[in-house]
Image (cartoon, rainbow, N blue to C red; front, side, top):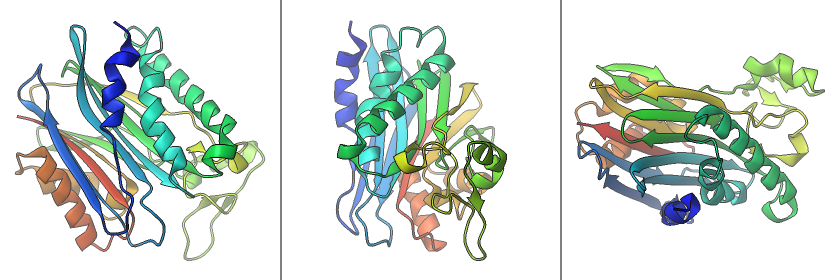
Length: 285
């Protein structure tokens, strides 16, 4: 069976926000593992531009396997790159011939391929870019997380939070950026920025910064065990005001995944987060 045919409806279920003040939300369950459910929630921030976040959150059956496909794409300087990622990144990942056998290599190759496509389409997609965090849950047993930028994935096992992604901050990758001919600004009252512009060291797109900016993902593989309670994927609008432990504790007593995602965003907003916020929660019960 063609993998791309199998996931075509998955991509259409990704969610996009268009209007200021609007929100989007949804949930679903695994058919293979009845105790696994997922939910997502999105809220427009207080900026003057349109919502720039996109989400994919769904389980899909591929022959005798089930994949949970979860992703948050946080765009900047426009939403076109994030929109492109929503429609193409999982396609590119799953069409790699070695996805099942060499998953990490397949993910890295697909991330590079997708970034090349975005750069080639810069006249259409614009000069912006997007961060990304993706998680693929295979048969409810194996979790593969990849990310570029500062959207984050956190897993909770036996009440303990563990970060599965890497926050790609310019200050942490200063030497690498400088080795490529770029610089990291650190002005008073502002966060470190690549070439004085972008507040993340890795992202898709951003053609004008690409010589100094990486799209190479960090990849983590985590096995799901009996003590696994939840997975959280969220854009930086949550992580700016909540620690990993606070986020996990915030939802530990909420059984419904969709309600948990909404509650996390409400907590972030109550703590004065002003960014667009997207959140996915996967619950194991």
